Length: 180
Image (tube, one colour):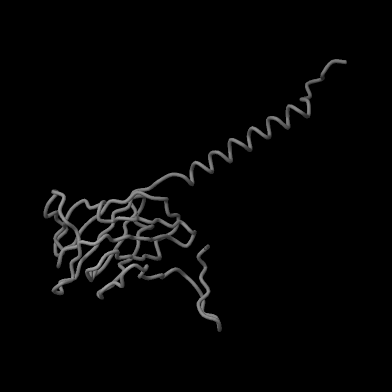
């Protein structure tokens, strides 16, 4: 009996399986993409506010895109003038000095909504008093964070920061919309 232009069911199943597998691979690879971020950190002008310790950074968005930078010190790019947007030097120098603004370049998972939380962790024995931190997404300004103001000595060996992600007040505390 001749096939009258109809495709066999096993062939359709194989074609459908291939199409679904390819779609899954494309979606999975899209989530694996990395994005670039410019992190600006000001160290306050208080005497003894600088540090030579290791500083870690954690930030992300409401969709559980969490970026962790274990040693932010190693990502130092340049110092900038706090009053003008000009670069003071392009020579690699020690970051987190008193009254200085440093920029860092970080690569990590791509955020899909604006950055709404940021935490810092200080590892070592000396004190550090950051002024502000801002993360700019080089993918688009609409994904960048607002300024996170610290202006106090960071506790050592614990994550310390801010979570401004949307949430609602309940009788049992804040209920975050962020996926954990």
